[in-house]
Amino acid sequence: MRISILTIFPDFVRVVKEYGVVSQAVENGILEIEIFNLRDFAKDKHKTVDDYPYGGGPGMVMKPAPFFEFFKFYNETYGKPYVVLTSPQGDVLNNSIARELASKDHLLIICGRYEGIDERVMKFVDREISIGDYVLTGGELPAMVIVDVVSRFVPGVVDEESVKNDSFYNDLLDHPHYTRPRVIEDMRVPEVLISGNHEEVELWRRKESLKKTMLKRPDLFMKHQFDEIDKRALLSLFRELMADAK
Ligand code: 4HQ
Image 1: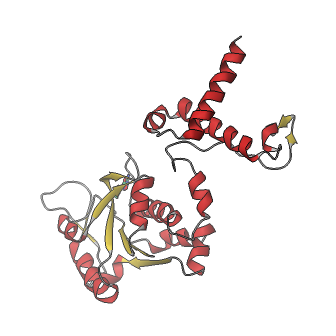
Image 2 (image 1 turned 180 degrees about the vertical axis):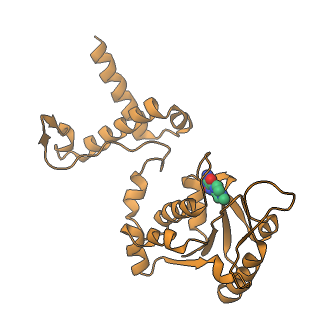
Image 3 (image 1 turned 180 degrees about the horizontal axis):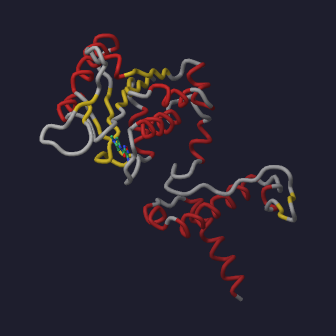
C-alpha cells in the first residue's frame, strides 16, 4: 500500500515512518510512505501557500493553486489516489474506518493549516476524517494518527493475532497483560496465567475483557455480539459474584 501525505511541515510528519512496526513495514516494502511539501507546488517567487480570506475575518486560508498544481503532478505520476482531508467536520476515525482506508491501494492525506483550505480544493477530496472533537492547530497530527491506525490493518504490518486481540477488535476492551517477574512488590501475576491451561487462560481473559468493558465502556458492551466463549465467561463471572455475596 502507498500512503502519501501533503503538508507544509514535512519534517514534522516524517517521524511517523521512522519508528516501530511502521518503519519495519516500510523497510520490507509492505508500506510505501511518501511525504510531499505543498510549498514545492507554489509557483510564485515567495512560495506562498496562504492568503487573506475573501469576505474578511481573522486568520488565513490555504490557497487553492498549489493544490491544483500538486494534483496535476500527482495524478499524472501515480494515478488517482483516494484522498482524505483531516478536518473537524469529518467522520470521527475508528477501527472500521481505518480498515476501510487500509483496503485502498493508494491513500493521500491532506493536512490542513491556518483557518482552513479554499473550498474549491474539495473537488479532489473523497473523504473528510476527524480524529476527535477538539480543534488542533493543523492536520499533521491527525495525518500521523491515520497513517498509524491504517498501517495496522495492512496485512503483514503487525502480527494478525495481535490485531484480533486488540481493544475494539470485537467491540470489547483488551484484557490485562503481565510479564516477568511473577511477583513484584508483593503483587502477583494471576495464578491462571501460569497454569498452562490454555482454555482456562482464554476464559479468564474473556471475563476480564467483559468486566472492564461493562465498567468502563458500557456503550461498547451494549453493541457487543455475544459468542459461546462470552456466554461461558459471563456465566462464570456471575457464579463468582454469587459465591462472593454469600
Ligand atoms: N483540525 N481531526 C486542520 C483539526 C482536526 C481534528 C483543525 C484540522 C485545524 C486546519 N483534524 N485544521 N480534530 O482539529 O482532524
